[in-house]
Length: 401
Length: 103
Image (tube, rainbow over all chains, first blue to last red; front, side, top):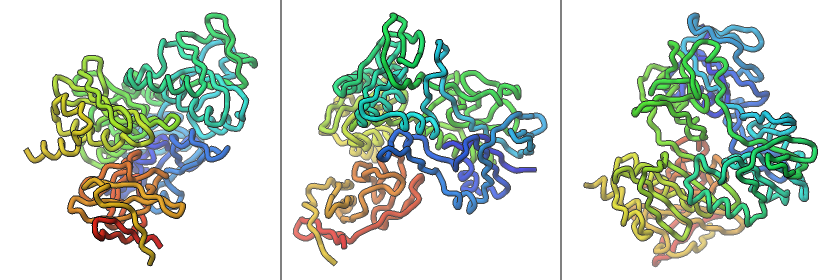
């Protein structure tokens, strides 16, 4: 018996390995990672130091050793036999698990147009090295997809004096995860920084000259990067007969449909109290889900209920979004010296909040909003809109009441 | 030990923090809920993020980016992903002026 086995050594898999120890589990823990490195953080990949891509490790080899975690790198899972409680790795060895965590993550969605193979992805350390080793001041890059990854990369490349074009099929950039007000502010900032946008345009073909759009025009580029989102890596689970959809389906405790098999991170679609499944792609979600999954693997029966939260840095602007703003929410705007905050009220109750400002200037307020949301409070729109009203005081007076 | 003036206590919110740059380095100065003052290194030990932008609750400061947290009285890292303690420096208030000993 090989104890706890974790497939995927990104943020959730690695976090779960340590969280199993924190939960008091003392048996064998095996962490299996497909990449040829120690587990590393993905957010720093876009923040080059000079021309070098950072390799910020989640943990040093010594930390894995000290925690008694067996780390197998450069290997993936080839086959899962959930009935037998066994997983076969890409080198042929078979691990018999007590509990298994699928933390297989997601992989970049691929374009299907002619020449699509010429577009680079941006997800792994190797991807980052491929991109940044090919750019230089005066060169041109076409980024396909104006989501968070595409827009963050655009900002970083402008900082390196690279000419940037962004191609997006939708009418507006950042339409999926960013509230409209902040998407507009960020779009305007990119335009002011010299990014050329080709919105409402599809990609017909990619060639050595650049990208041919569906309207027939050519966007010249020395390098083409595809950033059109990710698809959850569910192949292993699907082949093993586990329930899947837009991700590996789990219950609220992060258990999959197979006994003793859990899932967390980008690959997991988690059952919601109101029905349906939600899959989050964020750094914090990867960690908090992994912690819940690890405690449940060690014997707890904990429901995953953390509020979704993410950040995005573009130029000197910092965006943070806590909760899931919905079209039906009442929006309350607060303008402060550091930037703008929006609060989203669901029938009076604070349900979500977002802010865009210089650096991390609004992080404190977003954190306080998170605490107000977690406390189930219904602050008045007038108080929320007034920058003179300290959110910490709202929280304290509610706690004292 | 060389004491350096770091501004007025009134300029720091109660249960709050400010960034203080001196001699090419950056620090965070905290005013506790009881008006006591403390000084730590300014950047989170996980990634180089200014802690003074983070939320101060009681005697805890939380990194504004990854939610690692420290007890700013002792510098102790009390929540992941921060695992390395913060360096701390003596701080005092004299006639409403905050002074820190950075040497």
